[in-house]
Length: 182
Image (cartoon, rainbow, N blue to C red; front, side, top):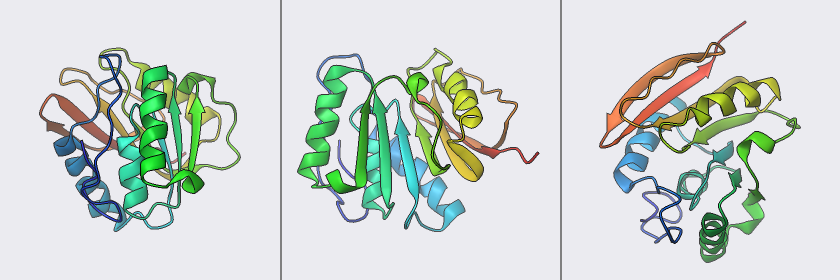
């Protein structure tokens, strides 16, 4: 596993020990960030969240590509160790906020984020439940972009969001969406 592009291009990332987490493959990350850049232009200065963060590969990729900051939320102890190791190796601590907790334990946001990257366990529906809660708590604003990774057979049905695109990449499905205008 490595950073695909930007400031830390080709730098290796450590994956968590064990099989409790499923790191996002390089090919999936490359596709996701290509999709995002084609819509956003670049990631310069964005406030990002990597939810169900695992090793932090998604958020660290965003930081490498110019995001200003990233909130990482992960509850698995082995994943948190790998995440902290990756942040230290890239000397990125000043741009990172690591929260060792469940995404569902996040309280109200101080301000909405620009980009939310969710890679929950496949087949659980956890990403959809989290997005509904995060929208109610102010983490998602009218201009936010959201990426939700699911397994190949999972459907995404969210009332508060408009699906921009879905793309299958290997065993993953990437769903890009925006909040629905009220």
